[in-house]
Length: 560
Image (cartoon, rainbow, N blue to C red):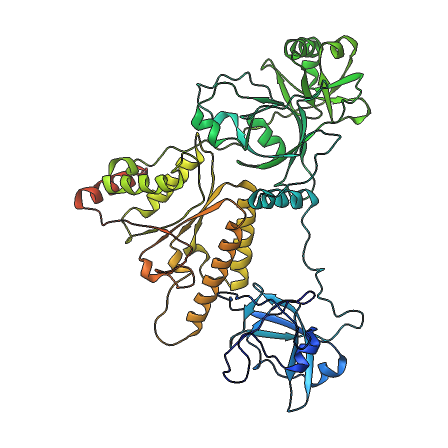
């Protein structure tokens, strides 16, 4: 219930012949505390499926209230962080409190296992304390706002007059993932996109600062020249408008994995560089200056950009890195620069960048040989790629153990990771996290979804979801309550994520009937609208699966 200044959450019941049809009655003391006036018009909306909370922290608004408050909250059902409550101690004695914090999500419903923490009042303020919430770096906040604006079709703000175009968010993809049919003139400091690079009226229109959003701690950045693919297949173009393809060494330099998220910002001006200092081992220095001059002369049309302290290989023989005068981070090299530049050398050991990009694994042979398994793979991919481009869908794959669910999910992951889609997938084995507390599970999935949001579009794969979200029959027990809480928490996280972000879900279970009603409903609106069932394998198929499994092991016999 809201008015112009207050938002409050209540549980409600109908009292006939006392309250008029278009009215709501609340206690006058409580209404006064919340700031509601008699006969005031308010907005009322229904909150469906309020999750059960595990812990609530309340703070009396005065010291006398704190001294008399010894038990809680038979009178309250639904709570919300920052909401004020009136608790009745006797027929005429009340205590006013503030809900400081609700875990794991707010608003939520209390039950008999909810932990209640009563904090003493602070003299300075009664406002909810948010200082414990770590603020995201500014660049991440802008990224989240960017995707929210796309989702709501809002304008993302004015164009920066200095840079001429908005900041651009891309996913980094290694050039090595492309098939050999792509003819690319590779350069370490050039990135390739499908869209056209905008033309500007200055000589550095295609040069950008690239900042890694996935980094923790020190900001990681480098500078690149932006180019575009020419004459690419339509399927590749449609799936890669948000991707930036770079040399494999970039992933080593930035210490990130596929598909990292970066933001490109226009370089407003070219720095003034008069001298290049070459760092390499002593045995290379005799010939390296001339080799570097020749290398730069061969690559400076069109102009190229060179990053300071970035290990490079000259003609596959000399390893070095460069630094520039006045500690400049990059240098733009063209023919005029080469005519006026001076060079110096420094004896220093240089380690070349190791290729840390993992090779793409081939698809599972079982998914092409056994007809029922292949059919399920094709059906799931037809849902996720029904228009030829990845779409956010939630899918349940059910089947008894041994029917090939894991192989199907592995094949789906490999297919989406590969050309031409390059979709990020993250697989969670629910059996491995069984037994964690609700708070630990909430943090685990929050961190996981945050990483998937940075790498979106993405697919979350959940193996054996029934392990975490199992239905329990009979009387309410601690196991029942815990399963309900986990299911409600996951349902809320998934729904909130998919309101804005392109993160789909593929989950497996032995039986759909084993899933908790809070995570899956057979009727009405529910999270999973696509359900596929794996049939039991026949004898021939089972023998083939055993053969494949055995072929993956090497038996070592020690004859001593």
